[in-house]
Length: 111
Image 1 (cartoon, rainbow, N blue to C red):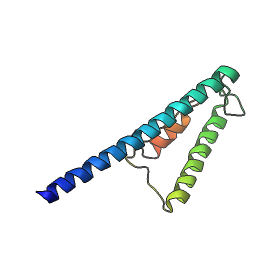
Image 2 (cartoon, helix red, strand yellow):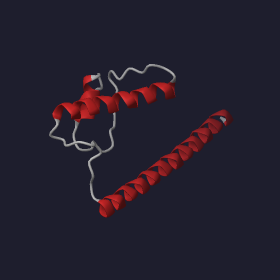
Image 3 (tube, rainbow, N blue to C red):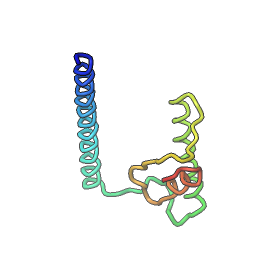
């Protein structure tokens, strides 16, 4: 009986810690969202690409370069080659086009 109560207490402590961490991340996300909104109000939207979106081949090359750059950082962070097959990727703000998302899907992401 005592062992079961100790296990329940450990589970409660873990849930409290997870809730606190989630609250921290949620609050940080709201803060970054507010900063992004303030920047948009002050400066307006500016394209992150140094060329016009009508230059299709340059846009494709740029998007592929961006994704490959992300993946190289992910590989160095994890010290392993990660496969994207079947993974769900969240891209925050697709920018001026959806090329990076399309390229990620072509590399095997499920969503």
